[in-house]
Image (cartoon, rainbow, N blue to C red):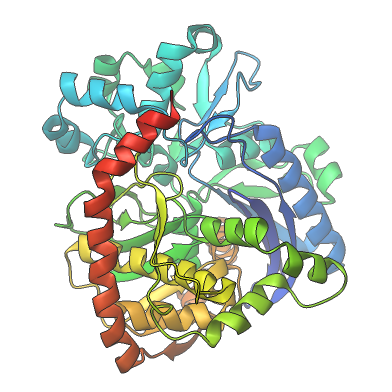
Length: 509
């Protein structure tokens, strides 16, 4: 029996799993960390946090498994959307923290792009628009606000590609990571757009020259890295790509026309297609399989699981203390309490815009909001309303896609651990929901990509793996009730939009 590793570098933690080539999960390890938010709407991370977490999670997984190093034949490493990418100097050392996808500071740079290049031209070349979400606007912010760091920077690398470089000494970027930078990647020709880069004053030399498929081997483990991780020198390291796409691979999505939502810290709800999707204001980049043919069209919340984690950390000290003392998991306690609350949380609606919002509303000024509170409401009511808010956000993303998404939704990510939340997603959207058996979707995708990349597995092999659980059917009565709440959810944002903008201005003075 041969074995493969899959590592996913996420926004709040890095997880590694080890599986055999028949699809059986052998061992796993998770290392958690935080995001730096030095100012409102700023979000940064130092890359060595990712590197250290990756090394520790791989080493621990190998040790837990007890599998000899010579039987572990490859690894693929996916990662969060690293926004600007890590700015590296001539010695390949970080110049500053990486401005990740969640960071929304580049408002002025976004306006400059729209004024000087225009959205029509931008979409013609890149198939994407202009927004602080995109990595190229963050690069422009750094150029404008930190010229000394800009002068030091020789190369931008996404998180997973930086870690791969540190483990192999080889520099490359996969198609999904390149495309997700946005306005400097030509989606028509699947390469860097010299035209857009010249217009923005971003040197082509700052981008990795080598663009690879997610099943390509970038390099082998160096002697030093292999010794540190407990693996064999030269073991192939496969590119993988953006973690939300890897999660779709882990759900068995290798063809056009399938809709899947990867919901972790944020939400990426995507239709995989080999044809242009008509939905407005979607984000698009090459898919992690057959990247020159398939594209990943998505909308989704900037904060999804993040707001529920925020609620637990901020409002649930009693439950957390009880958990630390050996009691039940705090999330399990909250889910049990919220399960007794009826659909709609008895008149509560939450807007999940805790870090502005990307597609489909594209509004950095959007704010997290709780509407409908009364003295009759409890913590359980508010918690359930937070779960419902993320489900409303998914429904909004589905409607923005503007396509027939099929008969059911594939749902991946940490949210699938909650039976209550899975049912809420089905009830709010009206679609049956299918979740994976194991909570290792991006990692599962990494293992599949590693297997295909090393030749140990074929596409037909991984298609046979049993990765999906039974369908969760929507409750018709709850769905009818949620239809009315969803309309309120939509109207609250429209009615408060100008107030949210004013609050942004007031908070900055």
